[in-house]
Amino acid sequence: MLLAKTLSGYIARQFFIWFSSVYGAMLSISFLIDYIELLRRGAIKTGVTLGVLLEMAALKLPHTAQEVMPFAVLFGTMLAFWRLTRSNELIVARASGVSVWQFLTPAVLVALLTGIIAVTVFNPVASQMEATYEQLDARYLKQSSDDLSLSNSGLWLRQSEPSGGSVVIHGDKLVAPELLLGQVTLLFFDKDHRYLSRVEAQKAQLDDGYWIIDNGRRWQTSDQSVPVPELKLPTKFTTHRIEESLASPDIMSFWALPGFISLLEQSGFSAQRHRLQFNILLARPFLFCAMVLVAATFSLRMQRRGGATLMIVGGVAAGFTLYFVSNIVFALGLSAKLPVLLAAWTPTGISLIFGVSMLLHLEDG
View 1 (tube, rainbow, N blue to C red):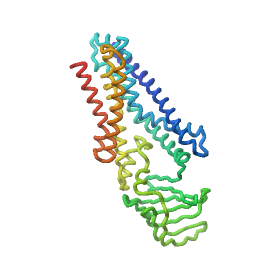
View 2 (spheres, rainbow, N blue to C red):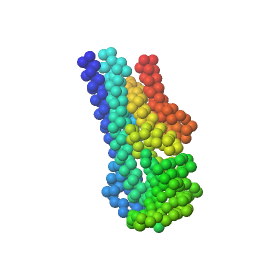
View 3 (tube, rainbow, N blue to C red):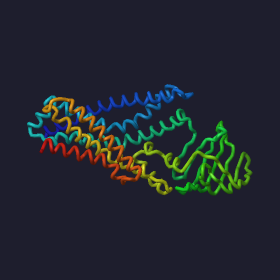
């Protein structure tokens, strides 16, 4: 039992060291690519400094880190087991009666724990930083003042005016997909963000590029209000744009997604994107375990077969296939061609089936 603990701890440590090394290298490359892209986008924008772009690249990095983590697990596992095979350590372990499933268990458990921490702890932090990044991106690079937010207090919108001012629109009640707002308040501001007036009405309807407000009342600087029989407020918002703008799943943390899904459904909007994202996050720890098994099929027997070339080619092919299949099934899930559960768990299921079947064939077949 003591030997098993010692061996398990050693394999787990080797896996984590190689995973961390590969992960760090991938993040460094990703950060440079993102920063160069931001430099390109910010080159023609006024008021955008290198410091702002550096801050944006740093804020975007955690989101990128979540995306590349499965591939870091894959390549880190391959390098760890390839190194253990090259040094004959795994050969000695096998000769002493340790099966492939026994020395894979520590790496699988570490991958599972890493995935759980990534989803429950790292994801909320990354989501918050991604939200801040998108705000800076809209302010400095897109230079747009239009904004939208859905909460338990209703729908909040802010849109720019041709004169340079802005309008903040709030509706306590929301009926979708017709986009009928109830108990509407409109706050008008000039280009210097000074308050101009307020309009209140029972409802507002989005129709053909306009907000149609009937039977409202306008308050200006005085306490006296004047009736507004009809107000047509031009807008760039459409039903589709509002649905697309409602809190992207990327800026919603794992813990906040269930409540926001419920809020979307109560408001009449589609929660397909958010349901898919939530299930993808649920499947991620098991995807990491699957990556360990897939990597083992390419790296455990390289010493006998004669070189690292096959391992590299096999690993790159496996990573590319996973990325390609994931994008296809996620797109099918977003378009409702596949059930959300099936779309979210397919890459994990395929990887697990492939890894287990190949190991059974190579080691026990």
